[in-house]
Length: 92
Image (tube, rainbow, N blue to C red; front, side):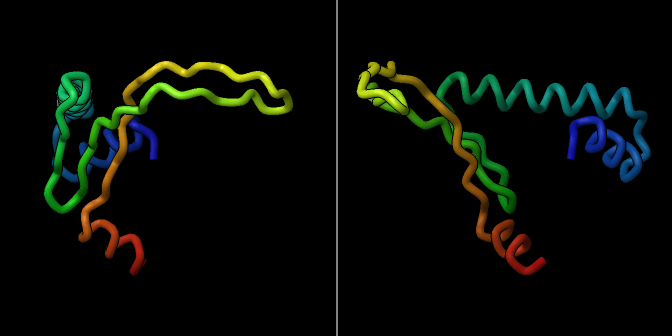
């Protein structure tokens, strides 16, 4: 599902104009992004959690060669689904 499809679906279900739904959705995504930038987890009970994860610096081999490259420390994001969401997906 794309963002535009989600906006259309929410607008249909709530009766709100698409422009208002888009503003709300963008604000929600901005808030989630800001929290993850601050290294905070974002949880939605019954849906799941977005968790910032630290990836340590390490050496890797470039495929097809024996050359090693140093990869810097960085942060990523993991999504951890709730038990309820897992059960819904498994039983569908």
